[in-house]
Length: 80
Picture 1 (cartoon, rainbow, N blue to C red):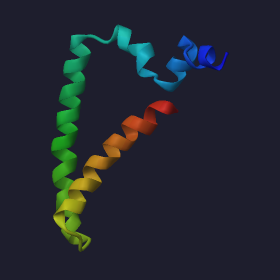
Picture 2 (cartoon, rainbow, N blue to C red; picture 1 turned 120 degrees about the vertical axis):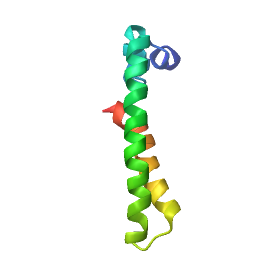
Picture 3 (cartoon, rainbow, N blue to C red; picture 1 turned 45 degrees about the vertical axis):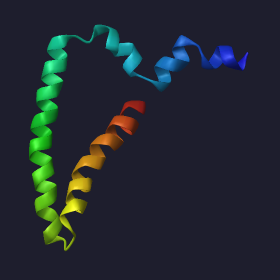
Picture 4 (tube, rainbow, N blue to C red; picture 1 turned 60 degrees about the horizontal axis):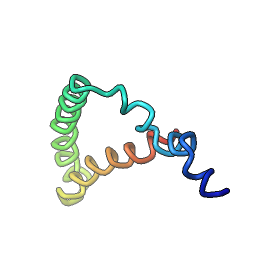
């Protein structure tokens, strides 16, 4: 019974929202998302590296501080 509950379509869509919209995702959307991601990375990464020395930290902390939030949002942002 528990296996049927966990393997149900509704349960999977609640846990992995990507499953509900991936069927409508197309190449044009992929291109737009790629451009948005590259643009954001080209803005945020140098900014993080630049602010690290101002805070008295090594440059790699600025790099980590600019990359990690994107991964956190990808993991936690889609579950809300």
